[in-house]
Length: 375
Image (cartoon, rainbow, N blue to C red):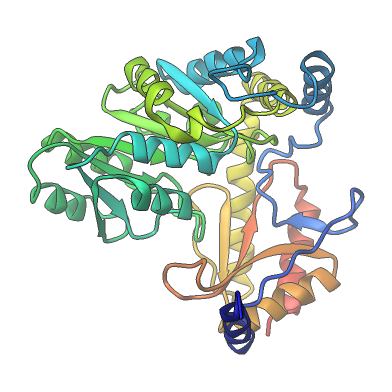
């Protein structure tokens, strides 16, 4: 029977406790949200919503075509210019998602015969980019510049190292300065995904590469998402102008995809300008993450020290993590639940996201609920 194998896989997922389900949320959810990636609390900010509304009224509901045909508006180019300036890079290119941006950067910068050195903890979008690229991929130990250096030493020719700046599971930061040094010793490029760093790390939220002194470097390319700290949707690649021009001509997820909806571009631009005026939001997100970690560990929970705005709490099993998250929801708290195959180390955990707009009372309430519902 066609697709009969799906039933077998569904049964295997049920036995392993790994079934995933969609839970539509209402617009006025009563739950305290520590699950979304709205790190700066901007997704519903009046200025961001107004930016989306104005863009939709001006440009319509969609981009109407690919970026190279009708999908590039003056709004897209304004967003690219201001995003590059804010993060300290020469140029930027906006995509319909952060996933598409990562696919573009990796595939277009790793031609046939090249070597891609990929961190073992990288996000799925970087992994998929490696799979689609024509180069050869070598996966190395997590957050280990020496492992990158050793892998690059085995190859002669074009090479690029690929890494998250902040890893989405535990929220730990990559050693960017060490990675850049290893790459430069071998004339390799460095591509990093700053999805969880933009808006949280660096001066005023300018990102992890800016904090590491790599902004504007001619051998560093950065991808970002507009859907986390900027509260919108979409993604972008930042880097030297010649790299961005190459992506325009070679990146399939740019050439053949419909452009980012104007409303999303308008919202992201409004959020970026707001962050420029209120840089303290970035520091507050980090402060909330640190406070969450301190309170959780004081309550006897095994929480990983955050380097940005993600705080993970270890669970004993996939089933236990699912039940723990469900019990938190029943108590009024929405938390993330990460389990295999989404976690590279096979350890299930609750994933909490700190937000700059959380009050001390909300932080205390969240920690209390997590402690009281612990399996």
